Length: 159
Image (cartoon, rainbow, N blue to C red; front, top):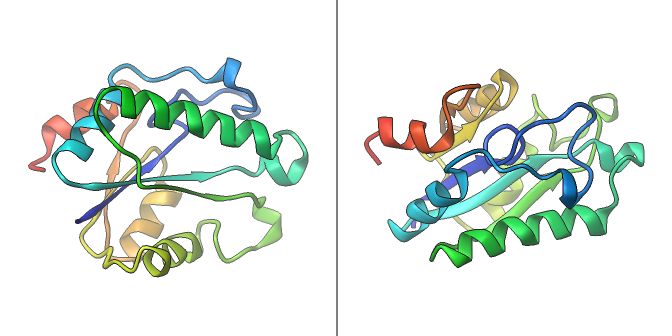
């Protein structure tokens, strides 16, 4: 199955000042959950990718982050879809880690763990930094900006 990467903040849920650090702050973007379920039903392996520097800064608790991801997965499953995996980077830019953009390490890890070829895979994100990483790894970045939801972007592509 061909993987599809979907960034969390700004694509599935709304970004908020200081980052989403609790389930109570998780506000889904209209149609995002249904769009993920539809991709899964079409046979794509849906991978959630997220960069969470709040973990390193102590602004986000690991258990709470996992609870947020469980909420997203549950909502997608309720609509008949599946998320194959959730991969995250807990580092800040100052950490200069291998997994945070502009490095490609997080996608490298996914490629190895899932033993899949990610070239030509769609990578839905909301910023140029992630889009550049996707391009470097041979993926096709799809920017979801304000006013252009994941649902809208999927409908505009031939998937």
